[in-house]
Length: 522
Image 1 (cartoon, one colour):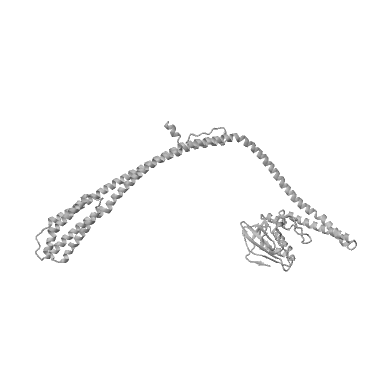
Image 2 (cartoon, one colour):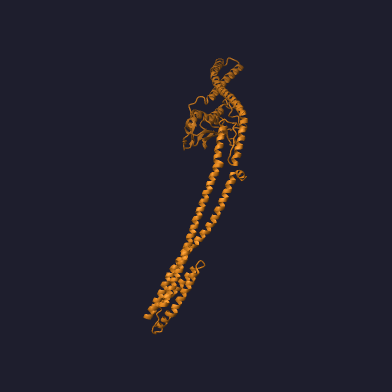
């Protein structure tokens, strides 16, 4: 029963229990190690900070007693006060050293040291009372030196100091032994921690191998078999409860896939059929567009000859019979000549429109600072002496130079055509970088474009004014739009400026942009 209950434990629960037990053991070991380390520090403190200075003080204390004895003998022989200074200095040093040893031998010291300190004080007091002070008093009174040996008293004092040194050494040895024991305990605790870590790691590896690694490998093999086409093979797992649940979910997915496989195959056949139909429609649409372009080109080209004949003969009639027919006949002939000429112009414009993008020399780097002077030269007769055409720092763009020249001729030509009466035309061309494109603006001070006509100006043969007011067929801005779109850009009107019109369009930038830093004005 317990094994069945353990098998139902999840991997997470097993890991939590394992690490909880390990954590409790390590916490106990850590607390014991901390206590042992504190005890070890106390022992080291006794060795380094107490017994060491106490032993040095004991050696200096013995030297202080020797100085006192030497001072007393010298004063007794010479009766000179200067020879008594070692005695007095030795007494002061004695008191300092005894106080130091007493302070160092605090609560962590031993009773033996305290008893030995008292023994040293008693022995030194006895030597001074029975030997040093009588000799000093006799010398100061200029009396004969008493016959006092003092050897026994000083030997007792020396023995007391030696006994004190022995007690201090015993205290040090005890601290050293205790420090060694705490070090051994710390080593044992470290070994125990290492054993616990190794055991926990081994149990973790064993659990992962039995509950995760091997079951996952087996599950992956089953999934690969199903993926290879064995859709009826059940998927199971003998690993942890999580993996068993995962295997059950994957098996459910396998059953769902097996049920829907036939539907998917049917749907794939239908999709392939639809794709074939779409490809056929796309090919037909491409062929139709190509035929329409060819038709527009051929129609506009083939209509040139009959129109030239009509226009020529109408002009011959007009010249030969000028003044010989009545006024109405001459008006009719004039209408015929004008209509033939306008039809010929429309066909020429349509032919030019259809050629855009059909006859191409490929894109090159075009310096617009070289294009604008050519445009100005072509429009010199229309511009007159009072027109001002200027441009700033224009870039080098990627495109076809003849088409870009036609673009600027149409835009600037429109600005010259739709000028305000009695106002000299002023046209300005500027450019600014816009990502991978250059945004170019052509601005004039003409009559402008009404907002309601903004969507019509780029439509082919769309006129906004009567023919008798402004010449042309209304195809110029349509040609401009087709050239811009052929170059991968877009064109639009800025309707928030006045007076005049402002046209923006974008052209892809060349790989290496070269700008003319001079500002040309003409």
